Amino acid sequence: MPIKFTYPAIVSNQYNDGSLWVANFPGLSGCWVEGLCREDVIARAPSVLSEYVSSCQAANWPIPEAPNVKELTDTGSGEVIIVSCFI
Image (cartoon, rainbow, N blue to C red; front, side, top):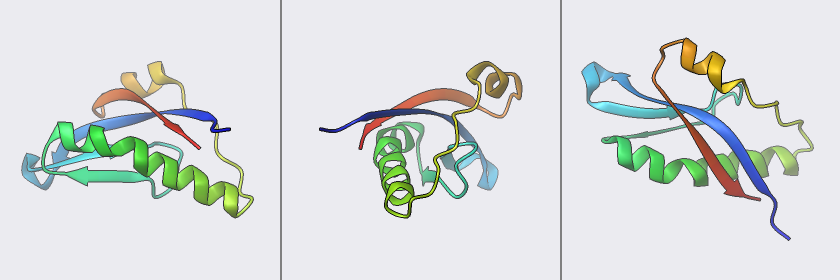
């Protein structure tokens, strides 16, 4: 039975002079998605998160606890969204 996994991401276009959008999952080393628009990275974020978590599980690596959403928002690094996927 699939398990729902939820984790925050920071969405920003502060890269490549604003032409590159990124959804970064703080705390999940190397877990992010890039795209040419906000909608694209948000749409693809669940699948990237699912692949990351599945890989961690397959390798028996612990999955870091999700960071505090308010603390992420307070950094001003970008828009904080909540991404969910099923593992």
